[in-house]
Length: 133
Length: 137
Image 1 (cartoon, rainbow over the protein chains, first blue to last red):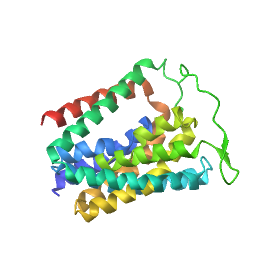
Image 2: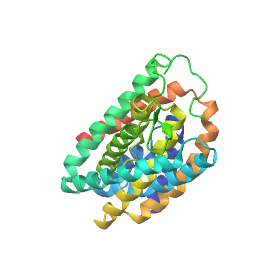
Image 3: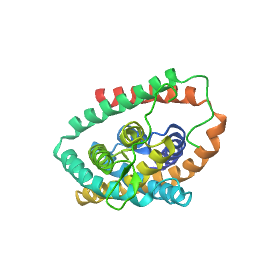
Image 4: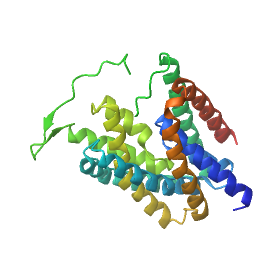
């Protein structure tokens, strides 16, 4: 990676961390487009790399929330363990698709997420104290 | 969320006698989140959190924490599968991790000082613009 890209990527990581914390929308949603459009990765690579960043972040957050007793962590992990089968299927499907097709699917997904955020914003009343806290 | 009237949580005792959201619904949500995660390289929370709130009747905070915990095994499965196909770019991973760890801490601090509504609206529009970029590029 060039020095410029490293700096841009760190800055982007900051942006992602802040954004996902504030919006409740995960980092992967931001990271995949960044990796494809700015870092020049292929669609599959960008997606794989995004997951490699999301998981450690999720582990840290889960430990914190578990200590705070927010949810039945074991049950949630169990839910994820079963969901993991779906993940394998999802990856295999992605790998079977050409990058251009996968990119369009991702773009549609991203558009839906974006529109939902705009819709939420429009429906929200005057800014309330953050309810995620 | 005030405009949405949520029913009382569905309390069902499972085989161990524990009462909570119906297991079947958690499984469906987990698998759906897993497929989305594997297919698009995202955490899956963007689908799981609303589903946990609206269908499994969890409160927002519990749903968020549940989703995050579920993302761990889901994401690991994705990493292993993509990794086996040689798709993970390690330098980019490490650099992004460094940035996002710091960013997450900053985000928590910035929470109280930013107009959430404006932020959501702007981010939403930004994502739509990026989506168009990706689709057209």
